[in-house]
Image (tube, rainbow, N blue to C red; front, side, top):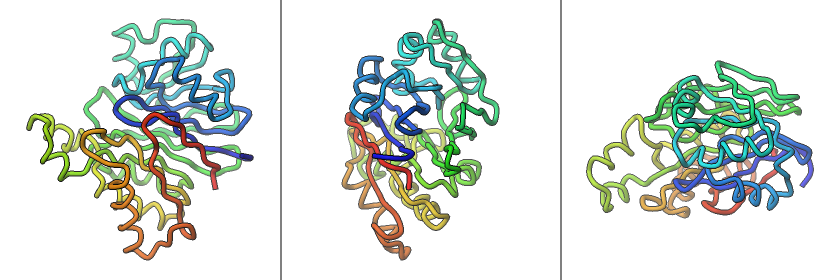
Length: 264
């Protein structure tokens, strides 16, 4: 596959990591599984850890940073995150190692990659998502762990060609499922996770703004199904007059396998 690529190494409550770049190198957003699993996922996509120029963190929850310290230390990769995220990680020893750490305030330039952050509504210290301008000038975005689709998030990802968008749970499955009521309330709250219906609404806005590829990610194992998430968004786009294959591509990020696509 030639040109610039967007890839999920793995996605879901058991671990999250996303690659943005090309065959010669790029950046990772999150390292949510151990260094061996992350390395194997990169190799499956035809990449090597030495090609990672920087790691950007969305927040401090374990499914986003489980492999961070060992992976960053082994390959001496710079790590970027919000002040709240870095303080939370430092307090638990996750930033101890042979790698530089930088506070992400608004933007950062990593070679020819321009990275802009935006705040997310999630029950963590200071959550962030990212929009990256690739060397070609195309924008791509990662927006997960969203309790609600805020105006800041939406304005930051509108105009991106490829977007990894959270579609965590189906509300019916969540509230009819086995979780304790307090956990159901947390997941569905404004600091929890984005449900399928809200993801579908956002996808419609993204496609109208020129998005070519929507990748639904961070699906719950217990409260969602890949086909259900896909159909919820596909139905919304069809109802809005968007034609699959002509106006957009739609995928669901696999939980434990890689998904690598060319940025259109």
